[in-house]
Length: 167
Image 1 (cartoon, rainbow, N blue to C red):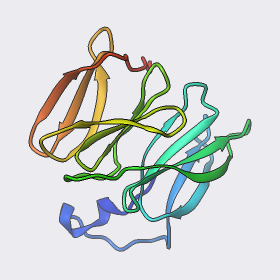
Image 2 (spheres, rainbow, N blue to C red):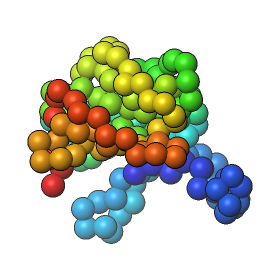
Image 3 (tube, rainbow, N blue to C red):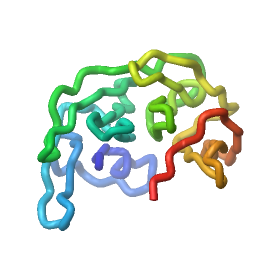
């Protein structure tokens, strides 16, 4: 999980001092007994998702407007952390919600809508939205509907490539 400072901001109505000098990416072991800090060099880590084979972990940094990629070791530790893609464009929005589809394409909210990258990090396109969107999910029985949570509305868009069934 990630620990950005947004929940402590006055904008959200609950201003609280930051207790740690960094924003981190963490792992909780399967039995819930151990918390491990995996990365502490983000400005505001936010959305995260695994590659199809779970060998890579993608973590976006909302403040810096990019997505980083880490290798996942057998013991769950991370290595690497290079910038994998940048979410640039016109319109409101920043990296936040992030998902992967059944072909390994990565979807990430960003300026102007949802940015879609192939497995190599090349931008395939941007699904334009009329307002800032923070998160989304694949839905319906065939997982070919994208439900988009925006500032004031919920949108549904049919897509060609289905998402992944997580559970």
